[in-house]
Image 1 (cartoon, protein in one colour):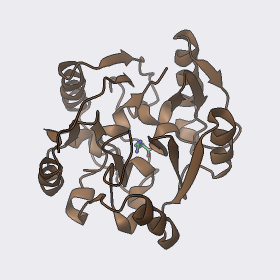
Image 2: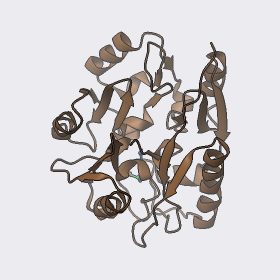
Image 3: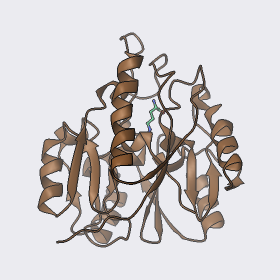
Image 4: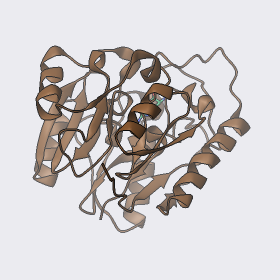
Length: 272
Ligand code: ARG
């Protein structure tokens, strides 16, 4: 099948202040050393890849003391020119919410201050005209109602049950945002039985990713409908994508994996 790329506009945050100094997910080990300059170099390969693919890439400046700010996907959710702000579950990340909202305001977005706890696009992914919204570890289900009110779209709640896949974007990838039976990829064991049944019904031809690829956050990928930027270590996922007519682009973001994030976590899509 011939795939077509759609132009993307994204927001990223260079990991100038990246480290692992606290533990809010099972991937993080503050006792182990991190290499900030390596994280920056690896992040630069993602930034360069997006420019090569012709995307518009905006940058927000990272703030000292906020080592997770590099994971821009958690900074909010942006659709129809409206930026729904993030309200983080853990105090360590809470100051990121206002920092991102300031950026959205300064860049002409209509900012909605959140009432319910939510971690932005990390837990909210658009497929067709439906927002798939995760809950279970970070984002409160009450925010799914806020999403419905703000965007007037269908919001489907998905329950995450595996602590290693604590954000929806670690267990579910949108390959074609136009939607369709094969438009996503996911890890079945990350979801409750009820949520899995929803995914099976709505996406009967989805790419089912294996445990090894999920364990390197292979699903934490970013697609424009044709090009899919993924972790290079997710070798089976790469093959599955090729078989389906996508063009995978593998990158090594191993240092950022120490914080529990990958390609998608470093990427917030901006939709006017
Ligand atoms: N250390 C960060 C946290 O636990 C990683 C966030 C990853 N972001 C994502 N969109 N999955 O909050």
